[in-house]
Length: 407
Ligand SMILES: Nc1ncnc2c1ncn2[C@@H]1O[C@H](COP(=O)(O)OP(=O)(O)O)[C@@H](O)[C@H]1O
Ligand SMILES: [Mg+2]
Image 1 (cartoon, rainbow, N blue to C red):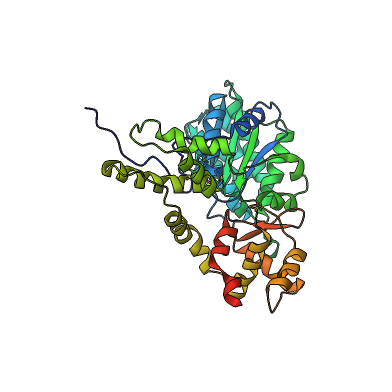
Image 2 (image 1 turned 90 degrees about the vertical axis):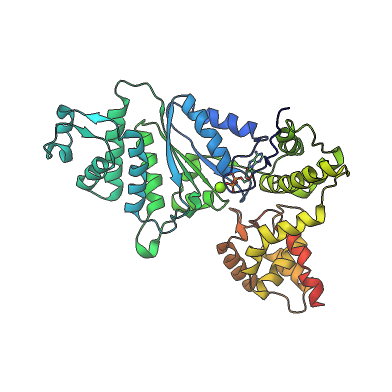
């Protein structure tokens, strides 16, 4: 008898590739169009709420790009909140050097590169030391230095090879920020550099992934960013895709059968958000596997799963909110009954008059929303409206019954 693998296939967790990546066909198609550009006029911004599948989709784009002749470099910018101009330049050169470090530049060619001609080695590798050395020795501002190195690298790389270009992929790019007070403009530097080299027909493309604050931030830094990027807003999965995300990974588990009504329950509970689909399915799988042996007819343990989600996913974020913030969030949760509804400051003020003995003034709401945005619970879109920045947060808040308790 063949031993069946009973390992739980579902993968709730940041950046974990799901057992089956459902939907996202139109995004893959869009991406294929972006890498078909010979002159790069559009770069990629892949944005959406936490847990919607940005990181794993970027991982899916990578081999698509590579098989059509692109190199792919980049990293995760989670730790990058306080980047300086020098930092971002070093970042780009570090990532690029992974690709170039095995390339040897001959004596003759290196004579034309100031930094290398001063060294008495016969051969030079295009490794990080070389790149940063050239950068340091180039006169001018960080932007001038960086452009010079990138152009030089392209001149060397394009010789005798027919690759299409290089994708510079940065995840969690909402962490990039100009810092006027410190006179450091790393984000502007990044945008200026790519705009300038793309104008010179150098096929280096940016692929930035991040929370919904990302694109407004880019545009605020450089208005031309508006035209420089194709924005893909990743939304929750449609019903058909959610069903596939549930069913496909279970196809090889013959004993495990989910009824249509169980599947419908999972679809509805998840709200279509990929992280929740994985989370719920992992729980359901464990319950169903245990019940197979007992011969009992398993059911989706909805209230247990909801409780576990509340503890695992929401409560940490909630714990950081003050009492007054919780009251405000509870008012908002009454407004936002359909997920991803938008709301304005005026909406909140109006609702708070109905719901609270001590309602909020509009300046107070403004101020508090801006604090809540900084802590990642809400975000402001480009039209000045707000939304919850965490999927299904409204339902969680309503379960806390803040307003009821106050009466
Ligand atoms: N298209 C999809 N189908 C099924 N599961 C997905 C899909 N996209 C993402 N997931 C799952 O959702 C979770 C969050 O994905 P992730 O890429 O980390 O989101 P983000 O980067 O947007 O926060 C992971 O557990 C992942 O396996
Ligand atoms: Mg991510």
